[in-house]
Image (cartoon, rainbow, N blue to C red):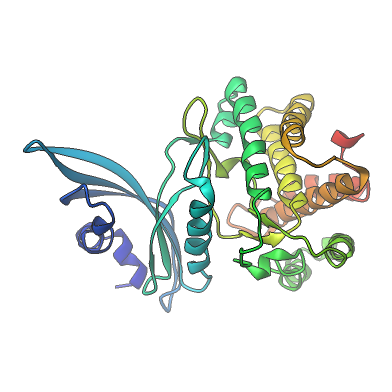
Length: 349
């Protein structure tokens, strides 16, 4: 049996949770059953794998002699070669820094398995922002958009004096996975008509980032993958943010630029209204900087713009290299990027 296949074996995983997770919930006496919900199930030869699994655990609680069932969602993110202990460390650090209280939260870290190179965590329950975009639920979109700005601000305002760089490769555009050299080689082999543009764009984005980061000693915790699918509406007031694989020290402008580009791109595809996409960008920026103790000056605008356009390039690359291969969408993005990546994005005009 493939090692990762065990994570989808109901008998095995129930016993595994009884041994490793149940002791963390002392109010419960047993796990009656486990419902397995695969979100990502990729397994190859030589025990190579990348899986994300949701488990609905039915915990048994005895209250006044009466057995009751409490269902709790537990998630597992496992990868045969990419680090996952850093995810556990990231969640644990943020949990201890107050992201377990208030209206802006994160998944609760539970357990790290060296055997599976997997992190297990209690999920945040709700629908993500992209869900509301697809449903054209404008009220929820705008509410969650505003709250997301405050969540990222809360992250960026943390004192990083005792923070480690949880994912050093992710700290710079040059080395963010899959890395510039790998991307350029793939483009050269599979989409050579775009190679010169990719080379010029990468050189521009990297040099602009380096120019700032090489002149400052102040770094911030950066989520690294700020987009609507990672922002969860948990209630009328509360949101959670998920997926901490890329948490690192860097320029906080990266999260802002990335989120602005992704919400514009995703809403543009599902709502197809450029004015509304612009409105969502303004909602995010207004809520971020109205609560921040910093000014949105020209220098910061240009840094945000740099990450905005780099994110557009990453999106196009995903559409050219990834499972969701869509060359026409990539071509449209690259054409738009080609005409504007050295300029400020419209929201700053």
